Length: 517
Ligand SMILES: [Zn+2]
Image (cartoon, rainbow, N blue to C red):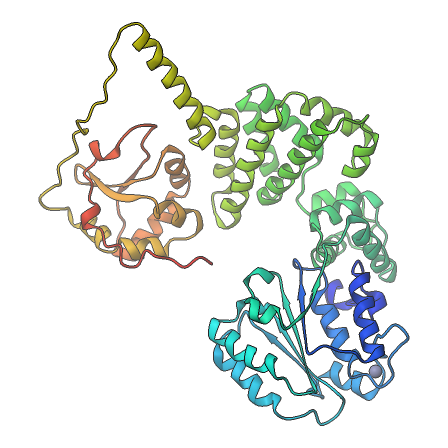
């Protein structure tokens, strides 16, 4: 038999097996037993919280011929078996992420006119329902307004906010909560004992924290660990190694290096992590939660034992964290978390994860390089004070209305630059992720005869340089040859138009509008 993932193999078949959603499974079980069913349900919650699993159990239960005392399906009668092996068409699952058009919904609606040949209910499970198009939602709404007696809809979504209110108002809504670390650990222990495997508690709670409330993630991480560990008991150290994760002592050293303004050591620590083959993406995510814990510790007035428990760290680790937390202002720590949160989404699809992480570390160490509102306000206040003092000393400070001299437009653009201007919209659209984000705020220009990409600021330029290979590839695809180009980011208060000609009027902006994903 082909290998089956733990998540599928141990997918609950009864309400009582579903972990962490007791209130929901009890409510649904009661409805099945008392036969008081609504026509439409909305299951919402983050991924891996059991929406689809509960939907499948519920769909079976409303058709089961031998309902259990908690409202669960028996899994043995003809109906249960027929639904499980797909020979009965009473349960229809639709993934709205790939079938989101009006036609898909129309097919359902035409089909819904026929009552089920066997059993009581026809159940439609529409997964990721927020992905339906506007037309599809309208078509669905018509059916939800007057559904046949035997129809039951279960709409599942991670983003209830994107489902039209007209649909929401016709559904009974259930919010699936994230799983706690305890729930995940208990479930993993059960699975392990069925698999005749064993693991340290510390290893399991580490996996549970990595899974961030998702049962699916917890079990697939556990899967990975078991597969690599070949029957040996799973230890904490081995888990870190397999998952490419980093021990908290590394984060402590990193924070100490940052506190000491020691860029060299901080970058060296990052180097070591990469050399050991650890995942940068995971390192960044873990570092964010480490900094968040530091913030909690510094905000906590208690003696520490309680919060050490909450954070799931040993007392030694706690003492070191407390010491580190004392070296930073809360505001500084929040700025660090912000910088790393941005980094976390930037590096997701980038091939230059390490470079971008280094840039982020530099930003942690050099607040003056940043251009956010708080530091701008501070710089403005300093300027105003200076002007006040000058005026008190009798110096007249007047506004200058004369604009800075701009670079004149060239009469003819070099071919490469012309081509880039003509196709700017498509170039922006065809680039990916971070490069696209930066290009949307950048413009092509000229330095002599060379193409210059003028970015919004130095930081954007730095990030774009880190992804220069990706940009070169986009250019090459567009103009069908290798292009020589430079990347430039103006410093604070610098107007790039005085340095490079402003080619704005020649740029083709037609296709730049990119729909948000
Ligand atoms: Zn049954």
